[in-house]
Image 1 (cartoon, one colour):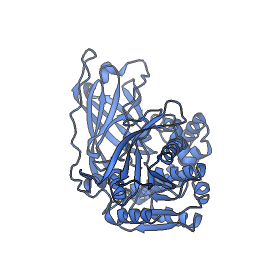
Image 2 (tube, helix red, strand yellow):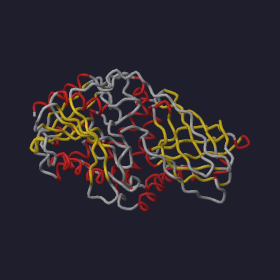
Image 3 (cartoon, rainbow, N blue to C red):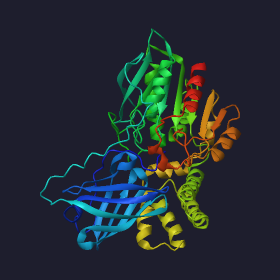
Image 4 (cartoon, rainbow, N blue to C red):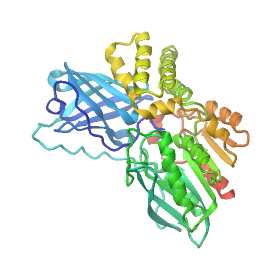
Length: 460
């Protein structure tokens, strides 16, 4: 559940009297302070008004931008996949944007300076490729002692077809199998983030132990097709259900020994799939939420702010506003208009200027955040009557162990719940657990977490 999520570039919709293509076309660069680390941010606006954002230090490129507008010298746009937006004033003769990036009710100063300018008649310039950290010693290298097959998976949803990779151990089988389910944001089949490929590492380890593994590009990512902007976790559960059915139909798979492994939001999706299909034999939840999205995001906000060095009193004030925003969305999740109005009322009560309110409230027009905030996983977790392993990192600031592990134990006493004290949200060995560390840690999955998962699944 990374702060910034990988996505394909989205076309922008131009609003306002001036077209941004002529005024804003080019490459804009700046830095934000996240978790005590300075991270580069790049805004790319092409000559015809298309726009994307990159976070090179996090290995994120092509983050879709929408609603780009320039009115009265003020530039605004939203970043749907990151549940965020930006508002800034054009200064210095059109060479500087002085403003703030907002995400989930948190505002981070961001000054963008134009480092490359395009004219409307010039073709869009390609951004300079940004290196991704290559110190990833766990990334599997050929030759492999199992066979690998690229597969195409139909779904019941019009326009959605999934692409993935199935790894099958040597021999005739039938083999036990697992489906890997990614976290939030558009992820590829390896769940690639910051140069790490955790699902590739996990699939390799499992297939070496005699377990077939299916890992799949999320819809709209890699080789998979389908709408993303209007989709929620419930839609992704339908996609995962189709992938599970595909596995069940394969002759080399033991049909009564197929399980699910879900990371982060995938831990919300996996129980929904099991509710819909009684053939699911077991589930592994890696940093899976066991409280409502409303409660989770409020606590996540608190941990990240305090971990970033924000004064505790200021952080708690921000968290109180965040809590009111989350509750307003949860209470009005069925209607984009009602959610936006409710959030705007909360921000007005907090004394926030209109310009900032207009940057924050519309973030909740998208179905995904409204669904996730309102969703309480207790019902789907309590309905599980199959073996469940749940792993949490003791330093996870995104799905905190001390919030979610006790909740899961109370909901599902039969589950095996393991807290690994020094690991973060990605199951890496961490110092602080803050998201700014993810890219700097060479380990993709700590051996203690990897062996816990592989040994448990093999025993099933």
